[in-house]
Length: 147
Ligand SMILES: [Zn+2]
Image (cartoon, rainbow, N blue to C red; front, side, top):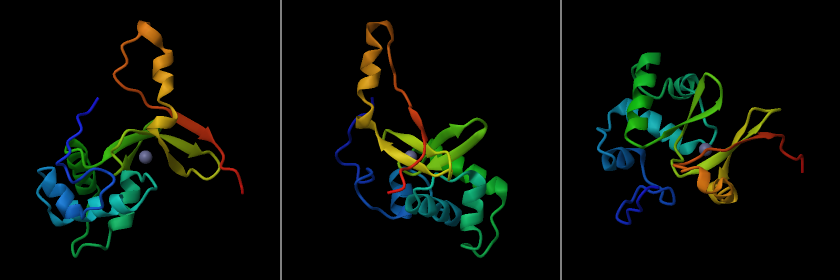
């Protein structure tokens, strides 16, 4: 499990600018990194790299290439600014909510919602002594109720 660093001002319950967040993670805040991190901090849609590209294209005076977006997402991921989410085979999505949580996929709309970790915490304990669990991810599929 991760250590709780009480002096870290970048935890999920604090709103910080993308630039501050990058600096606090030791990432040089280049314009493309700031733009991409800022977009991810403001959306809860769990976008793919292509969705990030189309969302931020036009935000910079110079056009962003696909390769730049991929490289930037990897840099942000390696620095712990964002994390990868796998909700379907072969498609990586990105999430600026780096706290431990799970996901619900609405199979009708494709919407991906965050499920707090404490809703499913007990499942790991059900495995008992037989398994040494380092962590787990749960993915729920279904439909949102209409009311
Ligand atoms: Zn999420």
